[in-house]
Length: 371
Image (cartoon, rainbow, N blue to C red; front, side):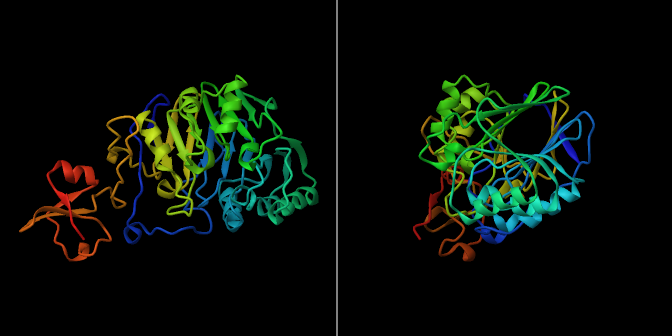
């Protein structure tokens, strides 16, 4: 099920934008969770973290060495039933802990279904009010199912024994102007390995965590706000020093997540990155020292051409699901010309060469077709 790699391993970044909707089956959003990888059952002595592919949203399931369970967010409302199904297939019968990072629908919409399907012992929510119907349904479900609710804020921690610690690093303050900055940020550590789960925390919250002296170092960083440029400042990333970055976002979403600025930053730092839209549900398992990642998680990092200098934008990566280039190059009466997918004559051109990026084509002496 798993391909093994060391926690300390850094590899080149995975993606940029894969644009061929026909070849990759891209959709703006979709219901449910991507096809499940081979799910591990209870693994004594192991921490298993599942980054569920719920489209444009967040849902992270953790099973601890002692068998305790934690769900951080539940994706948007249309993914609730699929999240429940996924948890049942993973052998979940109850949740010890539930965290709703903040009141946005793409994080808490699916939690009503979760609360109706499983007994939940304790829920953690940041102290912030919201008037949305989704948030109201969450509060009603918590009350109806008699779940103990506690405040999620910096300084709260849980000690599960067996070298497992859960620490809330944010929200640090209680007067943010943006709901994203109220996001509960968790650092989950087991032995020498830590995961940092940031919800939609943006740079303002990151700055407060840095100023607060929070212990941020982590092997795995779940990027804030789906890889938006409003999160993951260079200072924050350098402090976390992750080996792996996780982006939870849908293909071709309306927000352009993940943003090119964030991807460029990850590329410069040579952080191995997985994007749920491409990798599907990502399962990571650790014994507190080494890390394994489910083999089904597509990693396209080897196809990236990183920026050659700071501030340079990443090339768009034009590849199909097998990693083959999609840019057609041919030599004719007009010289060496390359054509991009979707171009006027793309389907009519016979490819004599295939390229993965425009830079690669240009370095080979080809110029872009005029139309």
